[in-house]
Length: 394
Image (cartoon, rainbow, N blue to C red; front, side):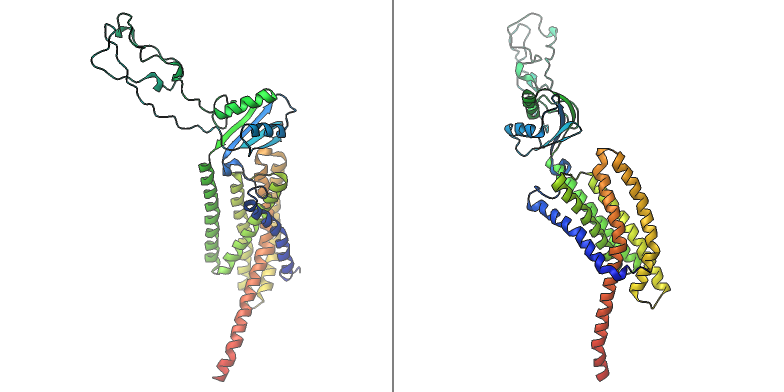
């Protein structure tokens, strides 16, 4: 019989070997200001993501980055992929709210061309949002041409509305605003832009709300799992060790992405939170299967050492755990290889997380439970040993 619990020190060392390097790179994220460690998409940081392709295929990301720096966009990252250049920079192109239109007083022409005595006020044409000239006033308002001021319905040259930026997330090349000026400068230097795949701008307020919601989801989910498992098994040790296994899996997955982000520029997007919640649920499910068998065997084999009971339970459930995880692994692997680039990071996080969850349920959570139980037994034994002489002398 394979003694998993007896070799738990080796499995603890293996867990440290897998999690500590990733944890170091996670901590490097705030220390280096994002130069190393985790890399986030504009969903979390805010900014403009602009994916374009020039007619000239020889334009390089370094050339575009240098040209953008001359436009005042110094903190810009330009990457290439599938023939397109992906430009990530500060938020530009966000439409500002239009200024409130203030009506200007105009004099209503009288029948003879002179100003009317009423002095009525009509809105000026500058308040019109449209840039096209509006039709003049009705001819019946003045039977004869007069030298009165220009009719209020006509549009002056300066009556055009403020240039609006291009819609976000579209394929229409911007022509106005700062982003339009940047596009014009790039085309003057590198030639025409043949295609725009997407244009997305996210402000910092939206991104900060998304980060807060993601952290709240993970925190509430973890506390709920801790409370339910503790209540279900009537022992806080089961809940805490299950939560420790969750933390093990989360640190492992996030650490791998921190390493990949440092060396391969792999980024974390909004789907990453969904993947992490899925990994948490899968890991807890596998841990509960093991713990439930431990509880059953503890009642059946009362009096046996707790380590032997847990080891026997692991050997009974390890086949089911590996089989279940392997079927999911095959499905995710097929999706990773043939599913396209849009879901690559999402599927990769699931692959790493489900593999880590299966490992932690068998080789980390259960051994940690045994370690904690034996520590309590030793502590209780020492307590009894110190109290016995006192009872004997009395």
